[in-house]
Image (cartoon, rainbow, N blue to C red; front, top):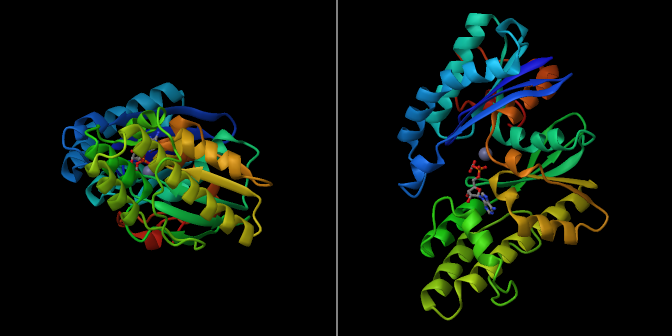
Length: 328
Ligand code: KG4
Ligand code: ZN
């Protein structure tokens, strides 16, 4: 089976072709990060407009590179939720038009299911059941994924996502947006045990990062500690909190594999702490390039979900989670 994957949920326009037989034939990403960096965050209207401009040329480039013909596409996978509504509209409308024109089924893929499944692209022997953690600018969610590919939400953040706190901390330190890499680099020269930051909901599978965010900002403003020590201690607190909660969920669900995805999963300290604490569990992080938003994970997810035969009606809408595949 050959799948086309379309991703436009936030500030990356991305299209990919994935073949079950040959793997990824092409994966094109246009990142708007530089455009939004000027504003210190993603501006939804600007994101939608850039998706509109980029999606067609990106599709043409992707098809050319893949070497396949349009008639060879078996399924079109598209992120239909969650994300910025105007941004999702662009991808979903494009997918529906293409599907209608080519007479191909369109599969609405849940963005987080795409992130989780992308680990299988990096580790071909990896298959569910596993516990999955998605950490990004908008999400901090733990899912259980069973053998039949059912996704069950176990716990999530009640306020800020992990990535948001990295971005906010970087901003208060005068760093760029997004700020994850800035914090990671700043932390390299710091002492991760120097400052004890608060951890919410100890021993529960849900998260709250707003208390940590306030504490970090107050510490920065007090000027008592170096930015390096603050960054290192903050980053270690996040890494340890994520790892402890996810390992506890895996243990209680009797899962021996843990998958971590989303933009924040690129973080070196988080990878290190997970590997240090994993004990008898196996931990799977996708390659860094696969952690951020991409169409490849959506194309791959479409092939994995094909068996459910749940396709988008041509009058179907974006952000209709009732109709996205993977997570309800
Ligand atoms: O998944 P993603 O590309 O976009 C969505 O939010 O969906 O994640 C972006 C987030 C940003 O908050 C960014 O600061 C964070 O991922 N991030 C990192 C690192 N690289 C990106 N956070 C910590 N360490 C990193 N190395
Ligand atoms: Zn994402």
